[in-house]
Structure formats: structure tokens, C-alpha cells
Image (cartoon, rainbow, N blue to C red):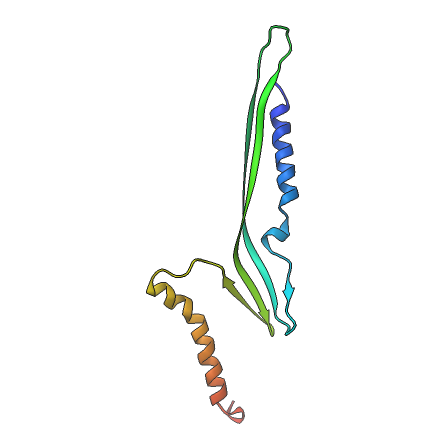
Length: 127
């Protein structure tokens, strides 16, 4: 049996490794002038396959026919925002389709706004 198919698959995997590294999933941090750090997060999908066959020829050698291929798909899914010691995840997703989905998405921001409002209303000496 020929070693051509395993060699083709090994070469395909090696090329995919060259294209995708850890920075493809968790991107390099971006720091803004006001001290906010933004870190992109992506989803990486990889697929590959290959196959081949040895053929019998009249002159006794075994010609080989086959091929291999692969692909990589990278989709941004979120950003991590680091500001003043707190970390927030901002998803990059399709907008909410239903009212219930929109309400669920609004809850964290609404809670943050209520907490900020209450902090301004409570005098500092009563804490």
C-alpha cells in the first residue's frame, strides 16, 4: 500500500496549522487612548479530507492517483472589553428576532444603569 495518502493528509494539516494559530481565536488586544482594552474573539472551523488509490499498470509499477484539500472559516463572535478593572463581553451576533430576546439582551445594561443611578442618589456618608 502506498504512503501517498497519509503524506497528503499530513501536508494538508501542516498547511492548516500555518494558517490558524491561537491569535485567530483570541485576537491581539487593542488599547484605546482612554485606557479601554478590546480583545476580539472568533470561532474557527476547520475541515479537510483526502483520498487516493494505487492503480495496477501493465509494466509492474503502481501509479497513484489522489488528492487532498482543506479549508478554514473564521467568524468573529464577540469582543471582550476591559475597562477600569471590569470585563464585559459584547457579542457580535445577529440582532434579536423576538421581543423576549431583545429584553434578555437589555437586562445587563439596564441593571448597570440602575446601579449607577442609585450610586449617585445615595449620599457617601450613609454607606
